[in-house]
Image (cartoon, rainbow over all chains, first blue to last red; front, side):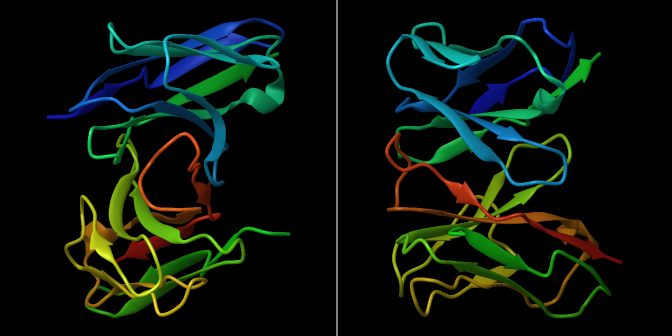
Length: 109
Length: 116
């Protein structure tokens, strides 16, 4: 079966750095997305990785290791508005999106 | 503002009733999708449409039907609602069908449905 694992919940402090991990076992791999979803709102696109390495976009970075079936989202200089759920999604060999359950990030002052 | 409009925002429904969730996009995207989101589970695809006039089944299609008469509209119908269909439903669209880095999903704000 296809599986994507993310921690259910994480807590971090305002101004700090947090790393949200995502491991996957899927039938093939054609890319990985990270989406942000604030409570009661729609998911919004954050990043996309298809090659190994780090993609940096302002305070957010996403890393991929295809050989390890592993990705992480790194959030720097945390702000209260970063409190949200972060969804990992993998494109499988049929170009279908497989979604993780999401990681709820709580930011404390 | 370009995007996706879903209606209703929330609805409480008696079991056995018929319900249609509406979805309209103004981005001229070819592909549209319906997902359900339940606590502790990832988004699950119900039905999709890669272009107007065509539809396909996703991971959890039973009890749901869709139509795609034109590019902009993609309604989701529950013919006879059951309590297990209590969920938050998201409509999404992308420029074309098939997931890829160039084909990012845009989501609507969601419809919260409770079936009693």
